[in-house]
Image (cartoon, rainbow, N blue to C red; front, side):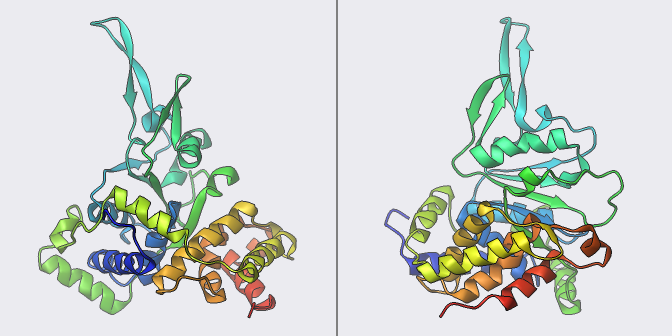
Length: 322
């Protein structure tokens, strides 16, 4: 990985990571693709799905493929901010305070069921996600240059949960929905277990390390070379701006949503083997990038209309650039 990477190199790397992840994450094509797009974009990802669909396995397997450090935090109502970022402890022997760093000091952090903890604890991640640093007793401690937070939440059993603050949920580059597998995919999952696969040990599926943290930085530098025409930029801003004044939507996406759509579209272009972004790249990413940034009006929620439905309507109403 010493040489400068080309668009084709990054495309091939994407295909290899996708192939490795698909050995353990069976049938979830969109989830795998969006996870890699978030990885290459350097953004955090929120994964929503019922228990048992492989959310933890996805994050741990990706860390195995990259060969990086992985830590998991189970969010609970009694979890404290210091349990995430760390704290200072008094050393009796030399009469000094020493910093005990928390699990946030890692490369890939899995915040499991993030909505099970109060806002104060959830917000302990906010500085880490936005600034790649944490503050412990007034002292700033930088995180590694490569830091991605995978947060999961369960769409059911909402009693006793705490909705993520808008300021924090907006920091997630994408929100991915993971659904039940198709029958044949679930059969394949069971066959994998019959052949010796163990979810606690992703390597039992035969996945291999194919890149490292340094390579991720090179990939991100190469992505900057993807061409984004002014017409595409205008297409992005028109989509996002419409969400701010659309019947049924109370609050639309901010410019951070526009930036997220721009960044992920460049990666999507590379996954398709192109060095330029086209309108289809934008269309394919509108829902995972913007669905969590919209706040719907009460009437819309009562009627059961989802953010995705609004976004599909908006895409169909806006003229596609040629």
